[in-house]
Image (cartoon, rainbow, N blue to C red):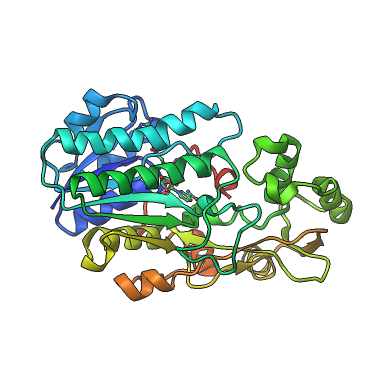
Length: 350
Ligand SMILES: NC(=O)c1ccc[n+]([C@@H]2O[C@H](COP(=O)([O-])OP(=O)(O)OC[C@H]3O[C@@H](n4cnc5c(N)ncnc54)[C@H](O)[C@@H]3O)[C@@H](O)[C@H]2O)c1
């Protein structure tokens, strides 16, 4: 198996490279020219590192030459100040250029795996609970739309050029060393602060028509320290929920999408076995970091819950981690993963 991994210096990418090397694959790692995280790949002396921007067709063509499998992880993630056209250019047209690179290269590509996102399901107001792969995909923002366009472009190319593909839709991906920043007062202050962005925030459907949620948070938090554990709940005192995915489980899911026959032509949600309720998430942080816990009541409800039944049934995906074990591994300094050091923080992808 000769595998091209794009976004190889990213949160998921470097761990994917590690897994493939461990499996004995020949790996070519594609990185953005000048990527400050490229040195994370120095621990793999046998991995060929190529620089290519997803905007540069000639460089992409070179990167694709001779590969039998492609794992496409490179993307422009949600960042408040990212110009809209950049999201489309990298995530939609970049995927097209990569597919063109595969076709130009004349290689017999046996599998092309695209990393997509739960952001394609309208995270601020999810259309179903739980979200299954056939749930309505109507993204609320340009990031989600660009990822969905990537999916559509891949399906078209696959039909046109008989390219076996698989799509994985990640929940919010967390690396153990960064998991302890979730469910903190600081985290929710940053996230609810996005309400001020209006429709420039990908969570605008959550904020739409609501009073100032950050003010409500601050009112209830009083003088509390930014580090305390905080979860949000609705007016009926039901905790909000979200789906999380440990980076090591993300790698496992992608590996299965890349190698299992049952993955061909399918899209899969990848997440922990169960969504994390804010009550449990905040309790985990309070317990493991010995900080006070506070539940804050909001006038609205938010539940982003991915079903992973299809990934379990079709490719035998079985996540090994939940939020608590991910945080614990971060605290223990477990070394079965490579730290993210990513410019795309967790808050920006939620
Ligand atoms: N992190 C999450 O919570 C999350 C959730 C859902 C889906 N995803 C998807 O998973 C994939 C991996 O995410 P991640 O968390 O590892 O992100 P990351 O930001 O850590 O890594 C993305 C990589 O893509 C590279 N990249 C960006 N623009 C590029 C370009 N123009 N040309 C070439 N490379 C470029 C970056 O340099 C970076 O190394 C992405 O496709 C993302 O959309 C992530």
